[in-house]
Length: 485
Ligand code: ZN
Image (cartoon, rainbow, N blue to C red):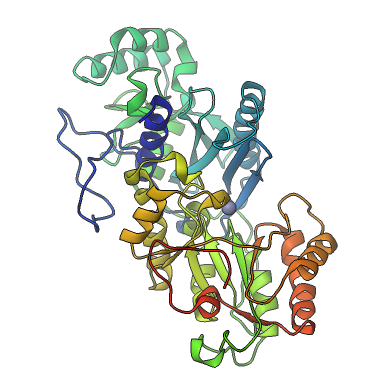
């Protein structure tokens, strides 16, 4: 394993295990529990208190993606209703990272491409404080990957707050961190000294642990070996916290919906468009006889996905949605609606990395967390995987095989992520689709969602029957790759 691969695998697996800095041992057990017990370590590793995004009514996600050529980025960020200044502040953190990544990396002419992945967690929510952790991971780029920033928001003033605002006195905090680090074998004292010498800059990622301690998270390689990923040092918050810090601590320990947006009518009414939505039944379509086409949508869901579901309900079409972790976690109602209305929900990984850069444990973690999220929302565990960027290899074959999942690629790509134009997307799909094809699109883009009424009508005019991927392909073999019928 190269150094870069080690960092990538640990960084992403660490995220999936909620900031656990210790990589799990590889296991021959094909069905490990989603949260394996911590491996033996000298001291218990502090876990950040993470709030499920479904707790925040109306929370949406923004996705910013750039699929190349030569360099790829995929960033998601939460949009907490009624907290626009928070969204803007997070956006600034992400934009700075994207700018730096583009400046620091050269586009590659062939894979593996330099890659930046940005993911997020809620680390506290209440009417008094909202905290968002943004994590940036670079895969095969400059090597200084694994950055973390935590931005807080004070609804009373309407202002974003830096992590350092959680404490009264930065020097007292630094002393307590240094003291805690003395008994922590992960910490390199010389690195920590350098880091603490930067003053407030060292404390741009602070939240709380599941035990209620103040958690100071340091970027990868800043205070410990890079292979550990970002590292959390937890300290007793007694006497350190500001008034806002105390509100933040409560928002982490006892999270409640901040309810910051004025009440609006439910934007996602149950399907009323179609009087009788058919339950999926593979027996009602025979794709060996009919000219079938499978419509597939990646990277969502977002709140706007419900508009696309409205169109599909009205036209009686079922599709296949490959969902990304944080978006799926934020939209359990949309996932449930998909299944109720006969669509198929597949797995598009937790963080949207190029899976060919990860080891087996990291690939498994990327897939299992989304499976857990979808199962919790819908009662059904996905059996289809779409590897991000269509990037797959023997490791992905092996892990998907062990998980009983089939890989679904595509053979029609209208490049709707690049050309945000409904007419162009419609024209490309209608001119390049044939019977047995799998069409790729992205439901996170309004221009794509708006195109699908015309695409559905156009494909039907051409004689195609629109089906889900399982209907198109029939029986699927775990681990296999499918590009079309
Ligand atoms: Zn994708």
